[in-house]
Amino acid sequence: MKDRLILGIESSCDETAAAVVKNGRVVLSNVISSQIDLHTLYGGVVPEIASRKHIEKINQVIEEALKQAGVTLDDLDGIGVTYGPGLVGALLVGVAEAKAIAYARRLPLIGVHHIEGHVSANYIEHPDLEPPFMCEIISGGHTHLVIVKDYGSFEILGRTRDDAAGEAFDKVARAIGLGYPGGPKIDKLSREGNPTAIAFPRAHVEEAPYDFSFSGLKSAVLNYLNKCHMTQEAICEADVAASFQQAVVDVLVDTAIRGARDYHMTKLAIAGGVASNQSLRKAMAEACEREKIEFYYPSPVFCTDNAAMIGTAAYYEFLKGTRHGLDLNAVPNLKL
Ligand code: KG4
Ligand code: ZN
Image 1 (spheres, rainbow, N blue to C red):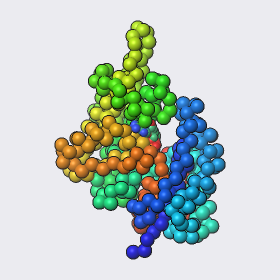
Image 2 (image 1 turned 30 degrees about the vertical axis):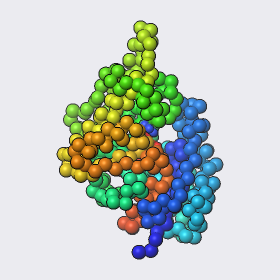
Image 3 (image 1 turned 90 degrees about the vertical axis):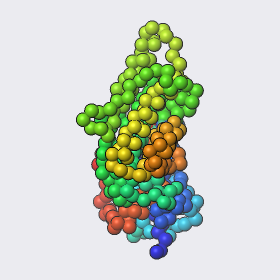
Image 4 (image 1 turned 180 degrees about the vertical axis):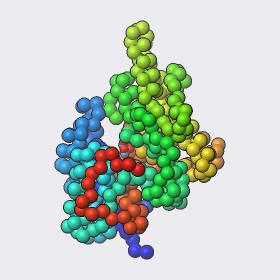
């Protein structure tokens, strides 16, 4: 079969990214321009600033991705772009750019669901991984447990009722003064703390066994910090970080393993920014070994937002015949 080269474009939040992917699995380039430094000043992503920065960077990032891959627009077989969910102004930059290139070069245009992209990140480094498998998607905006039935085909078993796992990390990090984005900072600080120092709750949703809820845990951390301030009790930030992280990890591991067991899945993957958490990776690997489940996880650079995962997802959509017209629009609350 002829080699297929897809240019992936991602601009749903605060990363402007472009990548060239061969046959869905081989990443020829993966360029990411992060805006984190800009948003850190405000303690979170400012949508208007994100859109403006995407416009400034997108052409440069695409040129760099083509250059690093050693290809030109003429070599491409298709353009894949995230069209939702995400910040509407940010998504529009990538979508408009992808449409312009597709129109000018008469290339197939493939809109990609951001979550399908995260799941697909697992295909990049695991040539043996094929559906069906269980996948837990844990990012700043989403927490889902799904069965990946086929490429781009999902059965959703559970989702968060309130905060996403990454959002909880970010909010708790802000409360203990670590700044944005909180996940990597809590991950690092936790290594110096005691994960059993403070008993934070592990929430389970009674009537929906695969759903998640993290807002109660976040409130418990905030209440603990307030109580310490009121009673002038010293706060050990590392213990708070480690105990909070352990509570999240316990719930994520328990739910994913229970799902895999209940649905007789022999393969389990994790995806999204929180999937780069060291403590989670270790705990999930141990649990999978105990249960004789094969465990898959992407390298950290493919866990957080990137365009290689979009190129990979677009390739499998391309094979299925998915094509979008020039009326493709950004859909901020696109459903999986
Ligand atoms: O997948 P992602 O880059 O963007 C979304 O689609 O949301 O995920 C970003 C989220 C942020 O909330 C960030 O704090 C979290 O992933 N994150 C982590 C780690 N690295 C990133 N959370 C826990 N531990 C980490 N090492
Ligand atoms: Zn993401």
